[in-house]
Image 1: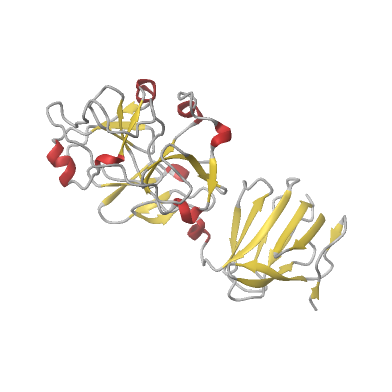
Image 2 (image 1 turned 90 degrees about the vertical axis):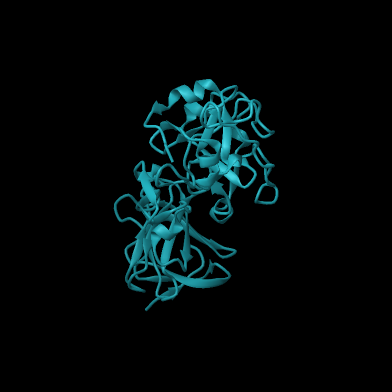
Length: 318
């Protein structure tokens, strides 16, 4: 029979399934089960949060729930990284097994039915890769898959949009009306519409952001964000500071639209940056650019050093 417990001392061993009652579950609470045989240095329950410290390397530590409304379990380390997830397919029997790496882990129940539902939204994605890697696995009609694994993004067929794709950064902040006026083919030019107000309160243009469950860093521009693909790109910009990165929720990140278009400072050519690190010149007129559904506000200004890092790919003609 399950035993209701609130805390445990050092060198804890579960000799039977133990109930941890009232774990925060969205706007509700749920009972979790420490499965029989689990062992750790300790575990605690406080203010609705259930944490486990240093799961045993041999016995391990398993957490389940007999509550049918608990669909998945999400586990994060003390620093917010190292997320894992498991589905509660059979309530009372299914479980998530914690890593045996010494650390403190928070176990959170969720009503999301699949672990991939915890992935950050990718525009145009039909399915996602396994959590926590995520990234688009397949795309909806009208999109094509670019990249793989965590870097999988969906581009509009013929060269379209991504959420969370592209590179990152500015040579200046790149937020004012660019000069020269941007163009896609040498003779075509257009004046961009005003940059919209940032989508999430408290964030402003030029802010660096990420979520707790992903290492991806983005930069904000109005209602758009661009993913800075790697630390080398980040370090090309002296005004980017690692300690200035703000952590936001996945729900807030999903309010933004991913931007994948860039041009180098002083160069009118606009490129599409794919999730695989390739660049593709938009070889089209400004009229064709607009008719394709692309937005001039999606064009980020970068420096020439960053542009040179990308591998040249086929031109985008439509």
